[in-house]
Image (cartoon, rainbow, N blue to C red; front, side, top):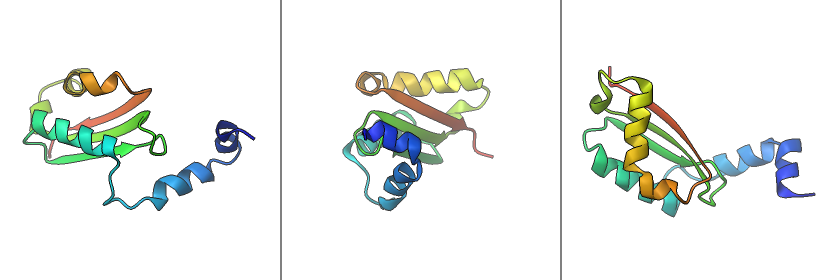
Length: 103
């Protein structure tokens, strides 16, 4: 059975693999993306980067909270993140972005 079919038939396999990894051990891709975003958004109050492809670096989920997003629509906020990661995005299959403004 292919890996993709295994995941489709048994999504717990993917969840187990994602949750088994310690939150303190970032992949190289997570580290690189975190570093780029910290440089581009130095005043971000919250930043979390997660490789949701199982560690191969094909897909990431980003949660970022920054005052730089204040007064901007969500599309504009996401455009800022995309622009910051333009070089990294070339090697990705997908990217989920969640932005917010500090309360």
